[in-house]
Image (cartoon, rainbow, N blue to C red; front, side, top):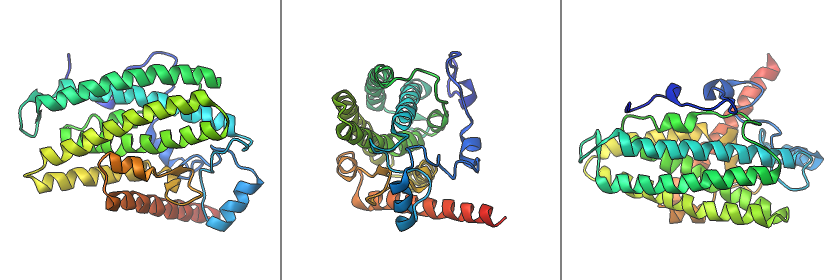
Length: 291
């Protein structure tokens, strides 16, 4: 069996529709995110005028597009769970035992195997939730970026790119979806998201712990890994849609991130990355409007 797959090696059945993340991100219609994906009504537009926020709007049960937005986000969670399962499984298989840069300790493999078990369960839950919400596999597209981060040849960069950056985003998204289930009176959605959220905190905590253990005597390697994490965080800042502000479509789940091994400074930095992405998205819009 081949080790160290590329993103092009990722296999799917005919139900899945794959889109290139870079093309999707650079699509001027997306503004770094999908405008109006969570529904935009008059109140949302008024809020935008006050806050200067563009791109994703708050997902609220009374927004006209809320059902479609929730189903789209649920489908995105589902494909993310598949890729997280595949990424953790690759880390178990791709590296030999040991302590070198191209090797991983046995205990790390065990943690990744545990994560595979969790992600497989999340895939099942997400499929059933999607059916509950009225959608099916393939109704929305799949971007393979999470698996691309899991293809990094350095296991430490995999931990920061996947377990800390993208699983960290999952904490924020699951917390948002759980709150949406509560506000919309859907106890099934609320319970399932709460259940998966607890697992995601564990996955991020594993990434935080192993990052520190594997780079304890190599500060340069840790710096490279954190820089890679920052790049991934910026790409997935949702065009500035994730932050601490009250009107943020995806609120940073500070308490859960602290439990997962993030310091307050690191959480502040993620919020700052989102703010910068929002400013860059606004600048792109202004440039297009002027041209």
